[in-house]
Amino acid sequence: MFKNGCVFCDDVVRHHRASIVYEDDYTMAFMDIAPVESGHVLVIPKDHFVNIFDIDSSRFAKVHELSRVLSKAVMKAVGADAINIGQNNGPCANQRVMHYHLHIIPRWCDRHLNWERGEADGDELDSVAGMIRDVFQEFEEELNFQ
Ligand SMILES: [Zn+2]
Image 1: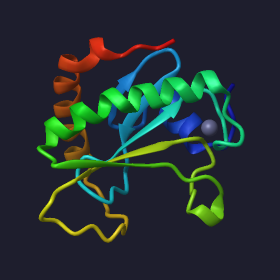
Image 2 (image 1 turned 90 degrees about the vertical axis):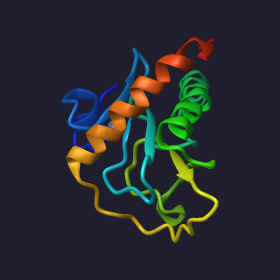
Image 3 (image 1 turned 30 degrees about the horizontal axis):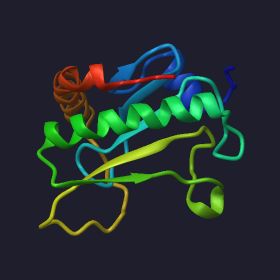
Image 4 (image 1 turned 180 degrees about the vertical axis):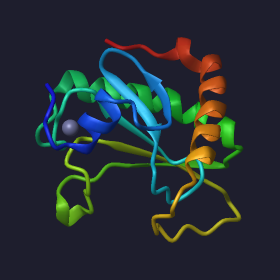
């Protein structure tokens, strides 16, 4: 299910205008273009769901299973100490893109995070995406989509 005018449906799913980390029939993961920290990845269902009030349980499970395994690859690829998982539902909860998405945000013990969105360099995003893709191969067999 594709939604015209949705930036994730149009740019990411249809035209692959993103630094893509992972893709299968149901889900995609790609670098956030306005990261709060280096290695900030978004995980989405390829079909258009607005948020947690809208997504079906099958796609919800796939997105979260992917994020479980992908978090390990992100952590290792960027040498982080920890990971935040974030997921916003509704404009008053800071949901900016109205297509369900989950944030994987690497954290470092000695680095304060102020949650301000940065401006990312496209080449750098492609480079980090490549590093995560390489490391993900070590973990991919852990994926257990039901
Ligand atoms: Zn969409």
